[in-house]
Length: 408
Ligand code: PMP
Image 1: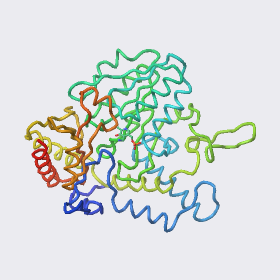
Image 2: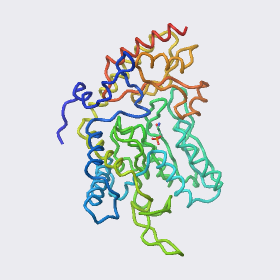
Image 3: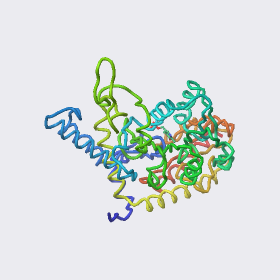
C-alpha cells in the first residue's frame, strides 16, 4: 500500500480531542504511555456499530447477529495481518494486556511442575510480575529476574546464567513504559529458544511506535491493549502460536468456549473460541480493527522519525533545567521521557503542569521495582505520540520552568 506523506497538521485534525482546552490553556496531551487518543474514524466506527449493527455474535441466525459476527471476525483478520500471524485463530481477543498475561500465566503454568522456572525482568509492569508471582506461589515455581542497569537497560548478559534446563518461559516487555528502553526482542527470543524456553512478549508500549511481526520475532506469545494503539478501551489481543494455544487448557469457562456440554463433562471449542468465554467486547474488537487499519495507512518509519525528533528536542531542553535528571538513557529508546527535578516531588510538578493544560503522568507507573532500583518514589513521565508537536514541547518546557520556579 502506498503511504501518504506524514502531515502532522492533517493527522492532528483526525483527533477531535486535541482541540480541547484545559481551563484557558490548549490541551497538551503527553500521557500517551498510559493511553492514546482516538482518531475520528475509530469513534465513528463505534457509533456506527451501535446505530446499525448491534447484536450478540456467533449464535444468531438473524441479520444483525450475522453482520456483527462478520465484522468481529474481520477485525480478528485485521489484527492477524497487522502483526503478521500465520493463522487468524492465533488471535485471541482479551480485555487488554493484563488479561492476556494472566491468561498465559494461568493456562501455561497448569502444565508446569514444582521447581520449574520462569524468568521475567526488573523492568516489568506490575501486570507482568504479579500473575507470575501468583502462579509461582500456587505451583512452587521459581521466579527469576533479569537485573536492571543504571542507564535503564537490562543486563541481558545475565540471561545465560539464569537459563537452566528447567526454565519454561521468559516473559518480558518489548518497551519499558517507565524508562522508554527498547529491548532487543528478536535476539533474546532466539537465545531463549536455543534453551528450549518459550517466550511471551509484552508489546503494550510497542505498536503505537514500532511495527511488530510475530513470525519474524518468533515469539510464542505476544500481548497488547487496544487503548494504547488508538483503539477503544476494554479490548486487547493475545497472540499465541497455534501449537502453544492448543496445548494449554482454557482460562475461563462459559458460553462460546465449548463444543458440547453435558452434566458430566464439557468438550472445549477450537481456537480461538476456546479462550473467549462469554460475550466479548464486540464493538471494542471492531474498533480495534479500525484503529489498526488506520495505523497501517501511516508509514512507521516517518512516525518513528517524528517521535525521535520530539524526544530529542524535549530531552535537550529538559536537561537545561537546573536539577533535572532523566531516568532511562538507553541508546535504543522510544519517545518516553521520565524525569525528576531535584528537591521537588513529582506530584507537585504534575499538578502545576496540569494547571497549565499539560497532561503528564506522575508516580511509579506500575513499575515499583524500577523505582526501588533508582531509590525514588516515582518520576514525571512525558510520553509523546505521533500527533504531538515541537510547539507542544515548547509549551511543556515553559510550563515546567514556571512550575519549578514556583516550587524551588
Ligand atoms: N505492560 C506495559 C509495558 C504497560 O505499559 C501496560 C500499561 N501501562 C500494561 C502492561 C498493562 O496494560 P493494560 O492496563 O492495558 O492491561
